[in-house]
Length: 171
Image (cartoon, rainbow, N blue to C red):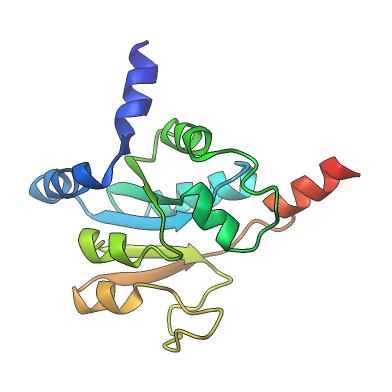
C-alpha cells in the first residue's frame, strides 16, 4: 500500500497546487510543466515525459479532464481511460512529481499559477510562434518568458500515437 499512497499523493488538486509549487520553489527546484490528454500511455508519451523531466528538477503534468478531452474533438469515445486511470498511470512514473487535472480547453490558468521555469510541448508546436490562432502556438509561452522561463519542444517518437493505437484495435 505504500507505493499506491506515494502514487496517489502525486495527484494534486487545484487547492494543493500553490502549496506544492511553493515547496518546490523553496527547495530551489527548477520546475518543468507540460500538459496533455495522455489517454493510452505509450512509448511516445513516456519518452516525451522523460525528456521533459530532464529539463529541470521536478516535472508537473497537467492532464485534460474527461470533458476537456471530449471538447477537443478527438472522437466520441475519447478519452478511452477516464481521468482517474490516466492520472494514476502518469503519477506512477518515477520522474513525474505532480499530476493535476484541468477542465479548461487550455492549461493557461495552471501555467499562470505555476509560472514554470520550463514549459514543454511536442515538436509539432513552435516555441517562436506568437499567433494564438496558429496550431503551432504554445499556450502560456508569454507567461513563462515574461517570468524568465524558457519554452522548449521535444521531438516526438515516430509511429506512436493514441489515435493509431485505437485505429489498430478497431481493425
